[in-house]
Structures are given as structure tokens and as C-alpha cells.
Length: 335
Image 1 (spheres, rainbow, N blue to C red):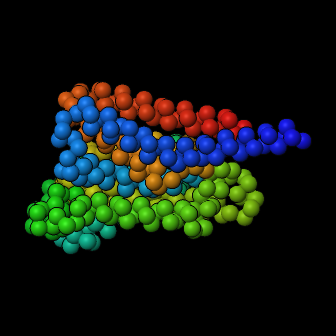
Image 2: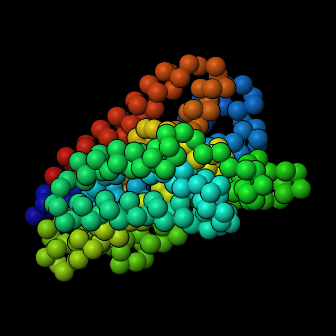
Image 3: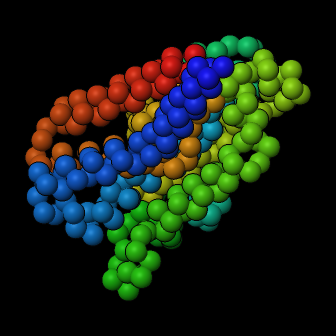
């Protein structure tokens, strides 16, 4: 009896330790990575100006990764994110240049187009019973083709007079607005991150997403409307990808159907590095944001250190492999 109690206590301590590691590990990793580059990189790396630039560069991947967090918690995947971002920039530019609409309407139009393809992903996955990897691999090509078709296989330039505030979302702050500390686009991402964290923690949608990702059959037997939750989650994934497209348009101020190629890998990596499990049922908004920051800090540090791009790719890839290995080890020990 005492042996059983000892084993149970040891198991509880082990599980608690892994839980804390899963929560604080990504944040600790970010601190270590930043500290390393603060020592080896030029002094400009640790300046307020560079920190602001890191925040601005993280915004696009970060906002798209919010939707991917929910998708991965659900046990799914979305490979069409990069293409949806490109489509959103093209739709926004087309509406501004040829639709003669205001900036807000154009922005909403780009997000709506992205949401429509997110909805399509959800419907195809649930109704055709095809695995998300295959469905979103197909829609990745479909959406990219649609973006090229709308732009007639070229960029859509927008008259600067039509941009209004759209080009200011991720621009460096002028001195008179220094009190904001960060550009408006970064604040939007922070607010959305807080909202998504609340959704995961306090709403039925969040609880059902975790339940489906942990065990879909059990969730179905417990009365969870699995298909409906999946459709909602993939639609939200499209919305956040559309917001990523809005941020991308703000940086480029053109609709570019060739932009964001491979962005889906950065978005998925941000979730995985942040503690999300590709097996489903695990993930957090804080972890995802930290994961996105880790990749941006690595990119910034390598650039300022003068290291070639392949070094950055090796470091990022190694971190992803370690994150996935830790996730698999955790699940193996849990069994």
C-alpha cells in the first residue's frame, strides 16, 4: 500500500514538473536566446529601437499563429495560411485601387475572403472526412492560384492617397506618438492574444477544442458537436490569417500574390516551439507568442551578428526538433 502511494506521489510530482516545464520552458528559452545574442551581437541588438523592430516583425507570424494555436489544439493542421495571407493582401489592394472603397472596408474585405477559405477548409475536412493535412495542402494551391488570378499574376500597386492609416499599422512610431511605445498593429496583436487566451480558458469553444484534440471519439460521445466546432475553428484560423495579411499589406503597401511563401511553416513552428502538441489537446496563447518571438529574436540576432541566413535556419530548425522531441517524450512518459 505504501509502495503504491509512493509511486502515485512520484507520478504526481513528475506530471507537475512537466506541466511547469511546458508552461515556463518556452519563456525560459526566449530569455536564454535573447541573453546569448545580447552578449555576442553588437550593442545595437539590445536597444529600444531594435526591440520595437522585433515586435513589429513578430506581428505577422504572431497574429496568424493565434488561429493556428486553436487549430493545433483541435488536433488539426492548416498548410494554407501563407497562401491566405497573400490572398488577403491582394484583395485589400484590389478593393482600394479598383473597388474605390475606404481603407476599413478594404481591410474587412480581405479578412472576409480569408475567413471564407477557412470555412471551406473546415467544411471539406468535416464533410469529406479527409485528413486536414491533405485538404489544406490542396487549398494552399487553390488559394495561391486565386490570389494570382485576382492580381493577374502581378503585384497590385495602390495609390498612396488611398492608404490612409493602413500603412501605419506596423510603421515605426514618430516622435509625437512615442507615448504609444509600440505601433498600433502590435497593440492589436496583443489585444487579440488576450482575447484568444480568454476564449481558450473560459468559453465552451475553447473547452471543446481541447476535448476534441485530446480524444475526438470521447468528445463525440460526451455530446460535443465535433463537426461544428471544427468548422468554427478553421474559420477563425482563416480570420487570423486574414489579419496577418492585413499586417503584411501594411508593411508592403501592395497586394502581392507571391508573398508569404512558406509562412505556414513559421506559424506552425511558433505554436510547436511554444509548447503546442501536433497530437492535439495541448497549446497556449502565451507559448505561441513566445515561440514567435524566439524565431524573430534569432533572425534579428543572426542579422546583426552578420551570420548567413543558413545559420539562422539551422538554429531555428534545431529548436523545432528539440521542441517536438520534448513533446513526444512527455507523451511517452504519460503512457
